[in-house]
Image 1 (tube, helix red, strand yellow):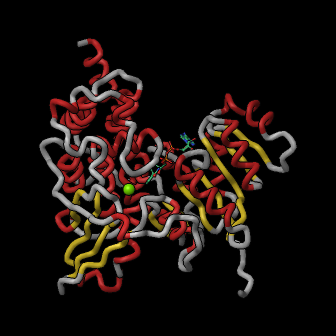
Image 2 (spheres, protein in one colour):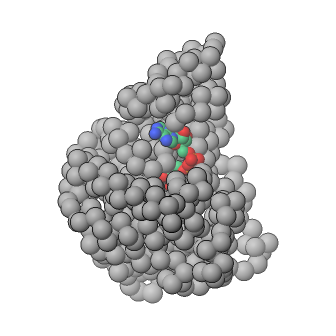
Length: 391
Ligand code: NAD
Ligand code: MG
C-alpha cells in the first residue's frame, strides 16, 4: 500500500464518550493519524491518560483549579499543558487537519467556532452548538474555508446517503430514534422515573446529558434542528421514525420512490471514522453487521403525547430566530437539575415549554444574540426549577 500522509487530529472533549471512541480509532491507526491537542473539562486523571495514549503535544483542561492535578498526572510527558477556557480555545487553534468537537452542551460553542480555520475538517459531535448557533457556526465555517462533517450517527447516515448535487430529487430525510428506555412507558409511569432508570439506554453507551436527552426524546428534537442546519431542507421534509434496534440510522427518500438508508451496529466509532477518514474510508474494530442474527428491524411512529420534546423542537425550528437556542438552554438547565435530583423527569419538558412561552423571541444572527438568548433562557429555567423545588 502506498504510504499515506498522516492527518493531525485534535480532540475537544477527549475524556467523554465520543472523545474516547475517537482516541480508540486514532490509536488503532497510527499510520493515518497523530494527535496534536486534547482538551477536557475537569477530570485531570482521565485527560492525562488520554494524553499518554495519544502522545498529544498540547493538553488543555477547562477547569483552572485542575491545573496542578493535570501537571502531576502528566509527569514525564513531553506535552505542553494549559488550563482554563482559553486553553480549550488554544487547543482548537493548534495546527490540525481534523478537529473533533465533542464537548457537551453550549460549552462547546466557542471552541467549535475557533476550530473554523482554512482547510480544517470539523468532525462535529457537539450538536448543541449547531442547534443554538447554527447560522453563526455555518457562516464562520464557510468564511474560514472549514468543512463541517457530522459525527452524530443519524446525520452521518444522511451525509452518506444524501447527494447535495441532487437535492432537488430528495423528497424527505428521515432520522431514526431508538425511542429510549421509556419508549413504551405510560406518562403516569414516566412521572416516577428515577435518575438511574433514565441513565440506562437500551442501545448506546453515552454521556449522561445525551442519555437523559434520549429518554425525553429531546435528543431527537435537537437532532431534527441539527439536520435542518446541515441539510437545508424545510422542517416539514425532515421526519422521525422510531426504530428500537438502532441499525438503520437515517435515510433519504428520493422523489422516484428510492429510499437510500445507512445501516451499522450502534457504535459511535463508525460515524467518527467516516468523518476522520473522509473522503477515504478506514478500517475500524466495529463488529460487522449480522442481519441474520438481528432477525428483524421494526419501526413505529413517535408518540407526540408522551414525548412533547418533538413538537417543541419542531415549533422552535419553524419559528427560527432564537427559539432553538432558548429550547437548548432550557433543556440543558433542566437536564442538569434532573441529574441533581432537583426536579422530576416530566418537569424537563414542562420547563422547556414554559421557558419558550415566557422568554420573548429575539434574534440569533450573531454570537452575542445567541449568548444573550442562552442566558435569558437559563435565568427563566433556573427560576422555574426553584419554584418546583419549593412546591
Ligand atoms: P460526555 O459527557 O461523555 O463527554 C463530554 C466531554 O466534554 C468530556 O470530555 C468533558 O470533560 C468535556 N467538557 C464538558 N464541559 C466542558 C467545558 N466547559 N470545557 C471543555 N470540555 C468540557 O459526552 P458525550 O456523550 O461524549 O457527548 C459529547 C457530545 O457529542 C454531545 O454534544 C452529544 O450530544 C454528542 N453526541 C454524543 C454521542 C454519544 O454516543 N455519546 C452520540 C452523538 C452525539
Ligand atoms: Mg444521534
